[in-house]
Length: 393
Image 1 (cartoon, rainbow, N blue to C red):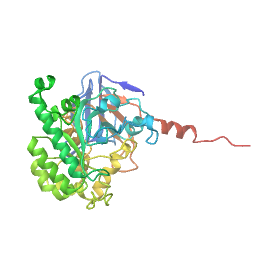
Image 2: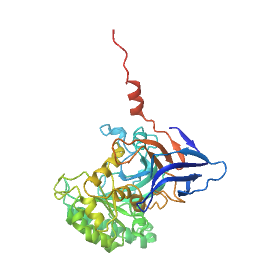
Image 3: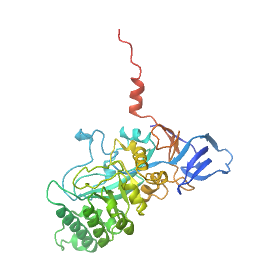
Image 4: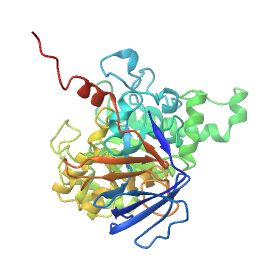
């Protein structure tokens, strides 16, 4: 991957989408040492500033996909390249996504070339599948890890959903007891816990409210149950999937629980998602719920803007759709300096040829932490290589 680090430079003449939903025309974005220094129509440039003409272009914050498996899988059908679900115990909260993440995955540049600069990635499987991590897609080290604890609730092939909810309560109860009686645990003076020491340790930041619990759940009744559990344990809850979350929009808004969803899931995919609908993002947003959009994938992260565009088609405003892939996922993931074009923010920016939600628009310049990042990737190289085939004689 090629990056070009510019110490002090400015993008000039562009239409810039701001955090409040407004658009500045013929604006300048001044960047120094990986951060945005100033944004406006009358920015005074210091001596020695390098100018990059972006006249007629559109600038947005880099897009953030908040629920992916990017970096954990190369080829889904090849077991040795797929670290999404390692199997094993239902409770594996000690599993860490940053232990499995491959920053050199050939899948990453493809997604990056479509304006995605940051992702949250996490394992799947079991009841508690472990902690997720956040990465800027040009750096090998996580921006934040752990960034979440991930759980799955819903219809099960084995046992019942009630059993899994009971196991979740038991794990949280055990983690609370463990936190109070670590010394007794070390002396073997406590009852046997349902999870290992490492699993119980991994749940401590969740119980302290430092790390949110991301629960992959779709059915309305399960969402109501999770709201009760989160309230009783004082947990910061995030609903992931949320096919039927729109039916509990008022309760979610009152509890200030955000929802990460896929707006193109507008048909029943299972008995847990019978009441899926395409305008769920708009309904939740209008009720006051913080909504983020995700592709829930690795190889399709590049379609994030297309998913947001579909949410606009289904009733979400353009500004809210942009929030759903920039500021809102940044807030959910605890990244106040990401997903925004403002002074002090990390310079993760995209210069577009037009409206980013238009399929014909292209990324013309990509900045990750102030570095101009290559848009090249394997698919593009293969296309160029075989674009013209030699004549067979």
